[in-house]
Length: 449
Image (cartoon, rainbow, N blue to C red; front, side):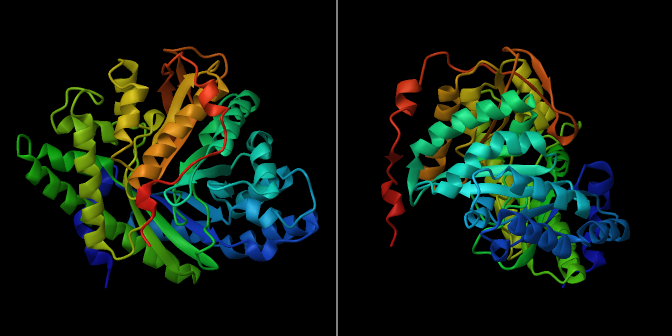
C-alpha cells in the first residue's frame, strides 16, 4: 500500500530536478449524450462534463498542497466527438467543440481532448464532417484539442484520410496563425487511455469515467546519469530503470488519491519523460549526458532506444497499471535541448523521424515553413504512420506550418509549448504519391490470430 512515506525520498527530485505530475486527466464517456437534436446533444455534453469533473481541479489542488507534488495540468478527455455527434442531424460540428470549450472553462481545467475521429480503415459521414470542421473549431476555441487516427497495425493506413489531413493542417495554420496546429495531432495506433494532450481521448473500451495520470521527470533522469559518468551502458540502463521506478510511485500515489477523492476508477499511470522549455528538464540533455556532443548526431537513435526501454521497464516494476504512451517524448519546441540542436542544424527532420522508430509518439511540435505544400505534410504523416503500423507502436505528427515563416525563423508558442526553429522540408514533390488515395494494407505482422 502506498502512503506518504513512499515519497519522502523524492523531495530532492521535486524541489531541484523538475519532477512533476504533468497531468491528472479525467476521462468521461459521452456516448449517452447522443441525440438527433444537436442542441440537445450539446446541452447533455455540457451537463455531463460539468457534473463529473466539477471537483477535478480543487481535488488536484488539495493533493498538490498536501503532498507537495506539483500538478502542472488538470485535463479532461472525452469520447471521440465524431461518435457522439453522429446521431445529430447537422452539417457543422463546430458547436460541439464550442460546448467542450465552455464545459472545460466552467470546470477550470487547462485542456479538454476528444474532438477526435478514428478513421484508420475508412471515414463515416460524421468522421468527415468533424475533420473538415477542425480548422474553425480550433480557431474558435481556447482549450479544445483534436486528434485523428489515420492508421493502425491491424487496419493499415487510410491514405484518403492522410491526404485530407494535410489540407486540414494547412487550413488550421492559416486560420489560427499556426497555434491551432499545436492542438491537433494525427495518430497511427492511437491508445484509448492517453492522458497527454493534444492526443487524449476517452476510448470506447474505457469505463464511464476514469482517472489517468501523466508523470514527467527528464530532470530527475538527467541528474541520476550525472552521478555515473563514464559507466557502461548496462549501468546506465539500470540507473534509468530505478529512477523511473521512483517517479512512477509518485504518480501512483497521486492517481490513487485522486481516484478515491473523486469517486472515480483509477485507470493508468503514464510514465512519459515529457520535457518543458525550462533548463534542466530536457530529454535531449539526457541523451547528451550519455556521451553525445549534440542531440541529433550519430548515436542519438541508439541512446534514445536505451532510454525509452529503460523508462518502460522501471515503470512496469513500480505499477501494474502503467499505460498510455509511457516512454520518452521528443517535442522540438518543448525541449530546450532539442531547440538548441535544431537551431544549430544537428537535429533535422529526417533524424527526428529515425528517432521516432524507438521512442514514444513521433514528430511532435515541429515548425516548418508556412508555404510547405499540403501534400508534403500528408507525406510526412504517411511516413510516420508507416513506422507505427510496421512496428506495432503509437506514432503521431504534430506539425506547424506557420504562415509567413521561412527556414531558420523562430516561432514562439508560449508556456509549455515553448518555441521552435523553423526546420526545412525536402523541396521535391510528394503530390502524386499522396493523391493516389486508397489504403496502404496492413502488414503481415497484423495476422496474429
